[in-house]
Structures are given as C-alpha cells and as structure tokens.
Amino acid sequence: MGLGRSLAAGLLFIMLSFQPFSLAAQTDTLRLIFAGDIMGHTPQIKSAEVTPNKKYDYSACFKYVKPVIDRADLAIANLELTLPGKPPYTGYPMFRSPDELAKAVKDAGFDILVTANNHSNDSRAPGVINTINTLDKLGIQHTGTFKSLEERSSTYPLMLYKNNFKLALLNYTYGTNGMPTTAPTVVNLIDTVQIKKDLAEARARKPHYIIVVMHWGLEYQLKENAEQRSLARLLIREGADMVIGSHPHVVQPIRMERVEMADGSYKEALVVYSLGNFISNQQKPHTDGGIMFQVDLLKQRGSPRISIGQSGIIPVWRYVHKPATGKSTFYTLPVARFERNPDLFPGMATSARTKMKQFVAALRKRLELPEIK
Image (cartoon, rainbow, N blue to C red; front, side, top):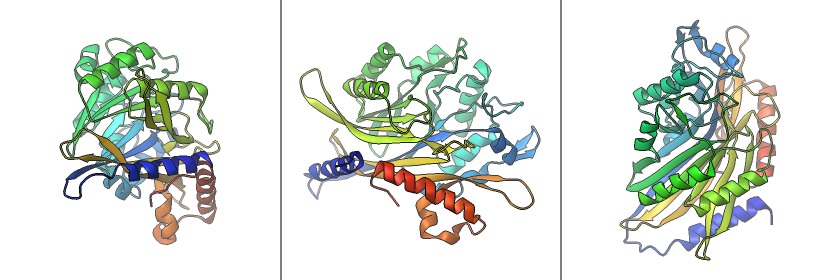
C-alpha cells in the first residue's frame, strides 16, 4: 500500500473510530485551511503597480480562491516576505513588498499569517516591525516574529479561540539567510531547547489542540529529509497535535507520524511536510503551485477530546495572465474548480491549461491523497 493510501486509510480509520458520540450530543466543528508560501517576486510587484512606488493593487490575485478560503473557520498561510512600508520594493533575494499585498491577503479571507521564515529579516528590524504593525492594523493575527522579547513573552504561543475550540499556534524557521536579527526584534529559530520550553508553555495553557508551523527542509526536494522527520517526532513528543511545513516551495508528503511517548504509550499526529507555493513567480519544476490543506477538527461539547473529521488537499496553481496589451496579472487558481468549469477563465491560453494539467497530474500521482473539491 502506498504512503498516500496508507494515510487515507488512516484518516478514514480516525474518522470512523471517533464516532461514539451520542446523536443527541452537540459536536463542535472547527474547519482549518492551511496555505503555503505567499511570495513577492519583482514581476508580482510590477503587475500590481498602479502608481510607481505609491499605489498597488493585488486584489485580483486571490479572487478565484477566495470562495475556498471563505469556507474555513480559520485560514492560515505563510507570509514569506516583508512589508517595509516604503520603497524600494524588491523581489528575490530581498523580499520587500507593498503593504497593499497584506490587504489583499486579508480580503481573500486569511485570518492568520505565520511570519518566521528565511526572509523575515529582508527589511532588517524596521521591516519586521512594520510588517507586524501592518498586520495588526488589518486585523490579521500573526506569530513567528515579534517587535521585542517582551511582546513575544506576552503573545506567544498564539492562542486562538473559535467555535468553542482553544488552539495554540507556534511557528519557527531554520534561519534568516544569514541576515542577523537586530534587537529588539525577535525571529523564532528552530532551537530544540527553546521549542521544548515553548511547547511546555503551550501545554500549560491547556488548549484543545497544539499546531506547529515549521519553515524547514531543503528547497525543491519532493520528499522530506531525515532532519524534518526527526524534528516532527520531537514536536509530537513534546505536545504538538499537528505539524505544518513550508520552505521547500514544492509539495512534500503528508503522513500520520507515530511516536513513542515517555510513558511508553504511542501518539499519532498529522504532519504536512510542505504545502508548496501559494503564489509566486518561481519557475523551477513543481514550484508553480502547491496545495491548501483542509481539515475539520471535531469535539463533543464539554469534552476536551479532539478527533479529525473530513480532511484533504486542495491543489492550487499559479497562473500569470498575459494579455496582448497591458500588464500581466498573477492569480492563484483552485484547480478543481477549473476542471469542473473550463469556462471559468475563458481567456486562459491553451498552453497555460496544459501546464496546469501537468502540474496537478504530477501532484496527484505523488500524493495519492483524498482531495477536497
């Protein structure tokens, strides 16, 4: 049996094995959607430019995926860029995007952004601070970077309250591309000693569920490496109930990882090793898209016990529409919607449709996972 089919069977088993609830009992449901890397390459900045260095509009980018995001109770993504608040706005290797990108992310329906990644310091300390301030003004919750150690102490782990659920969300990155973190700002690094302390703090707050988002692994590798697996098991052993990964810019496997606990019992937790790109201008193989991962958490009213209900992947593909005249426009497309309705984007070139089909065919073959339409 393939890994994907094994996971599918495992998830089905979980769904079936956690159905002893009385029909009369009230079951709370929390639908989560996780999206991958939101990037800001130079062509994306140029495509959104209305008035050079002054006005930008990214609203078109997420118009087709917004209905998918809207069906989540909490939608979470990785913001892999900085918002310096002023020009120059640049793409790779120093990602500095206009604040208007964050507004488009908010309007698309995202509730939470994780900000600890290898580009967190691309605008130095002022960029870390302005990114946080911009997200605060927009009402987007966030974690992973902080304006000061005091702010981290008072806001971390990020506690989320929704639909009678209490969640703890943590976020770490392997590094910051050699760009030092300047005091007073803080970027959460993958430091196992600190992570254990943070997870102990999370457990002490008695959430129903603990989720850790990790910026880890090797870029462009279609499978996770030994270090990722080791870290995932450490996180689970220390209290994580779900681990979500980013950074490779390609989709990596999704598995139920099983670890032995200190008391000799075993614990299983879902690990999404990499969601791939949500929107970017990357051109390397398999980087022109990614997945959203949707999962329903179930809890009988009055009980702290959580089970996993429906879960699955939602493939997304980055499309750059290039009209005969005018500027290009970047879109994140939910592939299944376009497969059901080919006329949803009548102006899409045949060559683009072919590329989309090739991307998703390779993705589905690798993952062999339940897909949510």
